[in-house]
Length: 311
Ligand code: NAD
Image 1 (cartoon, rainbow, N blue to C red):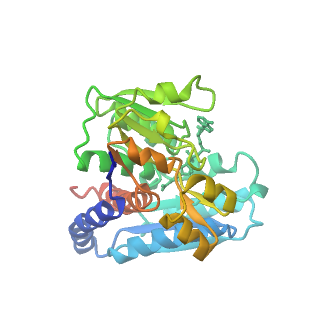
Image 2: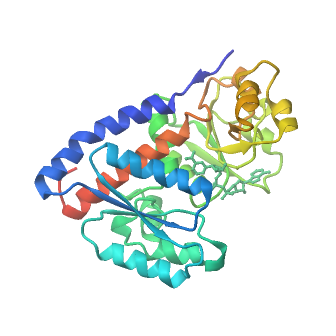
Image 3: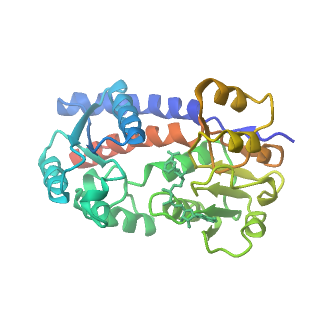
C-alpha cells in the first residue's frame, strides 16, 4: 500500500482563495484592509523566512502586512512597549510575535510578550484567554498549525467521530491545541510525550496519528496501524550526509536534493511510513502551507470580530 498524499499546498491555495471575498467586503465596509503586524526581534534565519512568508501571503490576498523589527539586543520591556503600541493601533487587527525571542530577553520573555497581546488581535491563538475559550469550545482565535491540521482533516473527509486520535507532543503551540481540536470533533484522544511508556504500541492503536515532536524521521512504520491517517507537523532540516543516507534510499528524490543543496527538509515521520499509512501529509507541502493560510484566516476573522462585521 502507498499512502494517499494529503496535499497541504493545494488545500492552502483553496482556503486562501475562499478568504478573498471576506477581505474585499471588509475593505469596502471599513475603508481599509484587515491588517497584520508581525514583530521580529533579532535575525534568526528561519524566523526571517517565516515572517517574510506570512507578510507576503497576507499582502497577496489584499490585507496589509507590516514587519516591526527589534534589534537582537532589545530588552523585554522594549518588546512589551511595541506590542502595547500595536494593541492601540486600530489599523492592525492581528499581532504576531515571531518565536523564538532573543535569549537575552530572559527565560519568561515569550510568555510575558505573548500575554501582552490584546486577545482580540491574538492571531497566533497563544493568549490564555483564547486558549481557555478553545478548551471550552467557544469561538476563539486558535493556534494556526493545529487549526490548519484540523481543517485538512475536515476537508479531506477523514472520519474523527469515535475514532482514536493520538497526538505525539504536548507543546502549547501544537500538541495541546491539536488534541483539543480533535476532541471537539468527537475523537477519543491520547496525548503522548517524551515520558510516554511504549510509545510505538500506543501510536499503533491510532486511527489518526499527529506527530509534532521535532525529531527527524522519529515515527517509523512500527508506530503506524495499517491504513491510519498520519499528519506530520515536524519540519527538520537535515544537513548531515550520514543521516540522509540512513533515512532515504539511494536514487530517491531527497538524496538528489541533498546532493544539489547540501540539506533537505524532513518531517518527524520516517519515509517508510508511506508504505503502511492510508493517508499522509508530505514535508514540505503538508502542514506548513496550511499554517500560513490560517495566519491569513485568523487575521481576517480578527478584523471582522473587532469591527463586529458579520463573518
Ligand atoms: P516542542 O519542542 O515545543 O515540543 C515537542 C514535543 O515533543 C514535546 O511536547 C515533547 O514531550 C515531545 N517529545 C520530544 N521527544 C519525544 C520523544 N522521544 N518521544 C515522545 N515525545 C517526544 O515543539 P513544537 O513547537 O510543538 O514543534 C514540534 C515540531 O513541529 C517541530 O519540528 C517544529 O519545527 C514543527 N512545527 C511545524 C509547524 C508548521 O507550520 N508545519 C509549526 C510549528 C511547529
